[in-house]
Structure formats: C-alpha cells, structure tokens
Image (cartoon, rainbow, N blue to C red; front, side, top):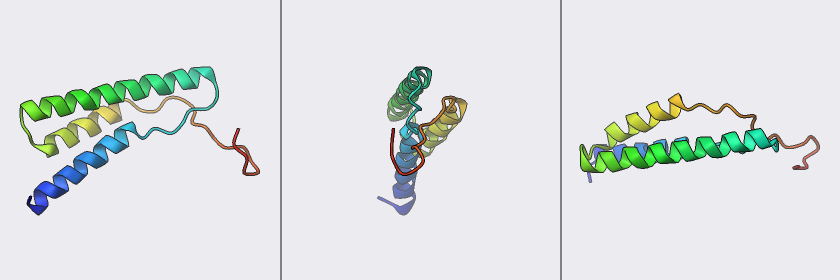
Length: 90
C-alpha cells in the first residue's frame, strides 16, 4: 500500500471516529433523546456513504469528504454532560 493510500485510509478512519464520537448528553430526557437520534443519523450516514463508496468510487478521499460534510450538517444541539464540581460524577 502506498503512503498516499495509507494516509487516505487513516483519514477515513479519523472521519468515522469524529462522526460517531459524540459527547455524552446531560441527564435531561430531551438531551438523551437528541443524543441517540443524532448518533443514529450519523451512523446511518456513515454506513450509506461507505457502502456507496465501495460500489462506486473506491476512493477513500471521496468518503472522507462526504462524511465530514454530513457531520458538519448534523451538529450537536443537546447539552453535553458535565461532571459535578468536586470530582464526583452524577
């Protein structure tokens, strides 16, 4: 595998992780629902993009751009969880 191809595949893996690595939501029910909806939409988008990429272009750079574009279109809109002061969680 050439360095360019290896780098492109590394970028693809990075894009997938960035799309799916969401901060945990606050304990509010609405935030938890928003978190799961967003995670589900992003996972579905990643799966579709990868499937299309495998059958059409097989160029990881195309998939990277598509995943990053789609991730930017689906921003985090819920309140992320913040640990309580004093070092204790929840």
